[in-house]
Length: 136
Image (cartoon, rainbow, N blue to C red):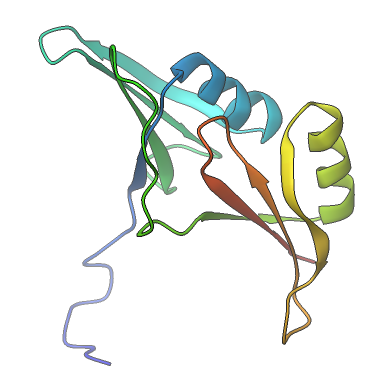
């Protein structure tokens, strides 16, 4: 590994995903996963809206940028993107609460194959996978 870069030179800022229905996506990430809507701005000339959601201020936390291109049909997710991962304290309770709220659990909580880490997967309204990882 090349450690020639000065410490602190880079910091993860955000992950951007394109979404079909911005309001549904904000409800999922904020209403179901407990993030906060940090900022939202329309760009009429470009016909798109950006919304940033996360668990803390952008100055110190990585966040998710939700990009909504106006008038666009749902996106083909492709096969290059994997998932977003979130650490949770009670994965079984979180999955139960998410399922009761109508979220689609695509992998029930349990140990990962070939390991002991307890994980689960939930799907957002556009089909993006969110991995939940049990953190003690």
